[in-house]
Length: 157
Image (cartoon, rainbow, N blue to C red):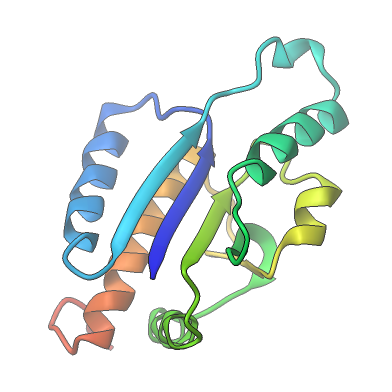
């Protein structure tokens, strides 16, 4: 199985890039992982919220191939403990899914078309994080999930 993290817009902060790179390099010991950045919409300040979500949605859906499992990182999604998330990842791996696609949307969330296509929604917290910070939090939690599955000492209950 391959895991892909799609994110709208680039990361501006060097400290976030450093942390994200650290966890991506660690993840590659456990699973094929790729982070794809979808460029910000041009002239987005002239677009309405709905127009931005629609254009971003089209770019997200264009990244999908047949058989992909689309998982939205969404504030209204299911919440997990770290151990629960690791068990969820394990179930996904056992289904024979070829690509598990996690998506961090733009500042206004997702278009209805993306919600309609999604297989699941996951919330990382009831708190709100910047879209750039979510990349770091998610990659760390994904790494943590794999260390739990391997019985390694990174996670402590």
